[in-house]
Length: 273
Ligand code: HXC
Figure 1: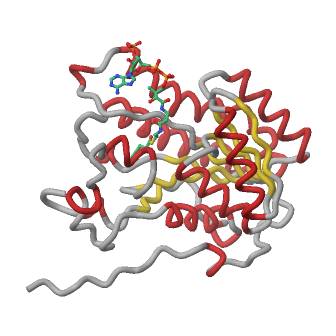
Figure 2: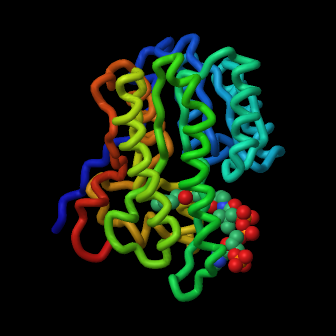
């Protein structure tokens, strides 16, 4: 009989890292209105940073900004923008600078996803995800770079692990995220001499997120889809938040150009998963 696996719990970053780690720092996060990016933003704010969150849905964004401020005691500015449009991002960055005067950290997190086979996906469906994930990442870098140069700041891009192999019904996202990984590597190399670091977090199966709901519409991921994960559980948004805090901290000063999977060992699993 297989032993009962030990399961490490997901913990709050404040249980590990100093509470004032990011005091006086400023975060700019696309996709921060919900899901993984909202949790990443919350963690950075819990360590003393202010934040601007950017997204398309202004109601959700405003509500999230209020929740984040209340939960952390830090200021959170909500700015509506579609990352597909550079001018909107440039204006969002201007609003952030007007309010906070600087940007130290950028999370390129806005993403789109749905399940569709290559043969059933329209050209526009493919293009839409490339535009949100890949062009959106480039636009965010372009709009923030001069400020990150000034602050000697750091980028985190939110990617995925599904493009490491052929994941069915994910051609659009796989192509988009592979490009995000490559973009981050070039950014790290080109901008390293300016004091900028750029890394990718590749979340594995994270429970309770819109992405997981979209990829596991029956809501059965815990019971059926990932029962053999080495970590013994689905990921929690806190797991991604904790990696975010580490990568933005000075403890990661020699870490750049990396893609770091936070996936409970999912990528090393062989056989039906
Ligand atoms: C096939 C679809 C489709 C579907 C949309 N399309 N949904 N095709 N199956 N389920 C097609 C449309 O028919 C259209 O093509 C094109 O995509 C654009 O659709 P729109 O609805 O007009 O686009 P838009 O309103 O801009 O919405 C973008 C979106 C949407 C990506 C389609 O799903 C979205 O807004 N998503 C944001 C939220 C989200 O996805 N969060 C999860 C991210 S998680 P035609 O040809 O008809 O014009 C994530 C993690 C990945 O990314 C890794 C997880 C492990």
